[in-house]
Amino acid sequence: MINGKQLRDAFISGANNLCNRKAEVDALNVFPVPDGDTGTNMSMTIGNGAKELEKLGDEATVEEVAKVAASGFLRGARGNSGVILSLLFRGFSKGMKGKETATGADIAAAFSLGVEAAYKAVMKPTEGTILTVSRCAAEKATEIVKYDDSTVAVVYGMYLQSKRTLAQTPEMLPILKKSGVVDAGGQGLVYIFEGMWSVISEGKIIMPKTAEETSAKATDYAYCVEAVAKRGENASEGFEKVLSAFGEIVEYTEGTQGAKFHIHTNEPGKVITEALSFGTLLATKVENMSIAHTELKFEYEAPAEETKEEKFPYAEVDPSVEYGFVSVCAGKGLTDVFADLGCDNIVSGGQTMNPSTEDILAAVQATPAKNVFVLPNNKNIIMAAQQAAEIADRNVVVIPSKTVPQGISAMLAYDCDASVKENTEAMNEALSSVTTGQVTFAARDSDFDGHKIKEGELLAMKEGKMLYTGKEMDLICSRLAKALVTKETSMVTIYYGEDVSEEQAEAIRTVIEGKLPNSIEVNTIYGGQPVYYYIISAE
Image 1 (cartoon, helix red, strand yellow):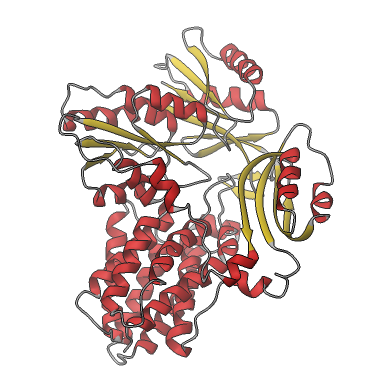
Image 2 (image 1 turned 30 degrees about the horizontal axis):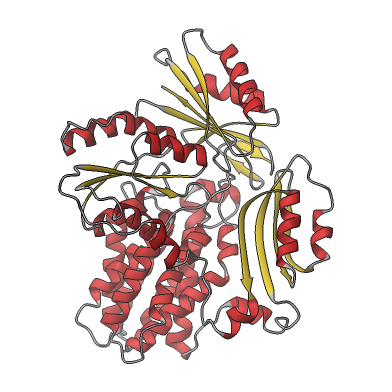
């Protein structure tokens, strides 16, 4: 039997263990496109819950601990893997209702409820993922309590079974086997169970890796800088050597498209300046290690609460306002497009930065309408939007747009005189009226969808499926545009990204226009989006 303190410490230990090893989980992602990786999303999700758990005293009951954890995980949930993780612990919380302490049987039953909730939330559950790993762990726990009701036996059984199931995931998903990896989400869950087991078996909380790794050197270097820089036209060679002059490089990888680095330094400003001279910064994190390791017990990469509140101040529902709109996108140009179409609030996010449930919820509740339509515009954000809809204090309708052009098409289908039901049907129908293509670069070497892909190569995708790879932008874009159009297509729109000039975009438009029938109108619009050089829509 365990009490609230033990359960709290187990959750925190699991969170720390996952956060310590998030890079390992990220590395398991087989999709070569730069994205909000699984390890990062899961660690930010569980990290949000751990911060709330830290505030609980030792006298808290298991019910209180489970409730706080579930709420923190839910609000911090990012990406599909993060949402599934939050649902597992949301169901677990329901199983702990009314309990001061928990037996092994209680834990097994509660986690089974979590698995049930996670499976119900996924429209088409895929075996060989975190869902399978969690289900098999829950089934093993249920089997164990038949002959041993101790929490030690149950938690160890869940941990051991999760590892066994994880090892089998490549046999369940061919793409994992072909890439020689196990499922990333499942691996993240194994690390959580491992951290929990450490507390249940030995009473030992696994501490944040940053403290363990840098405590001996914290007096030498005060700051930790992590960044991803996209190579600019005037980027000089020998960037790693330049960085090494400012401190100790912990991690450095460089490809044809850019560089990712982690450095300990006393001159963070100079490091950032050099990175900007190398190219565009896609992501940056600067931490004062001395403060982090002496004043903070936990460190997680989450936006400050003050920032969220300032950006999306809460607004009461105005009975005279029937409809409001929230959209998710990245890039000034795309933000302007959605604002011009009537979106009240726009959440910054997309492929590389999946917003949390709480980010979307804040934008919804800053929209003073009785009915708020939410456009996620990315398949990995839809579940977070749906979770936000469940806990909002006004009616929320999530239109499951998977791409920006789908979101724009849905907005154009809105009719201010129509009912909620009529608008929902029209906006959902509009999603199928547009076909989306995207041009980006490979973030890693990969063998994906029959393509042997090298880091830095150009990638052309149609509705998220890989079509072409290559090195010539005009050829990639024209082939993609031709693949998008049908006999019914009347318009092609090219949204060009932050690293593309207007002149370059016009040159691509001319090439594409020359490859398509004269009846198809081709336009360019500045999107300013990161990651994707071009987003091309056909309708």
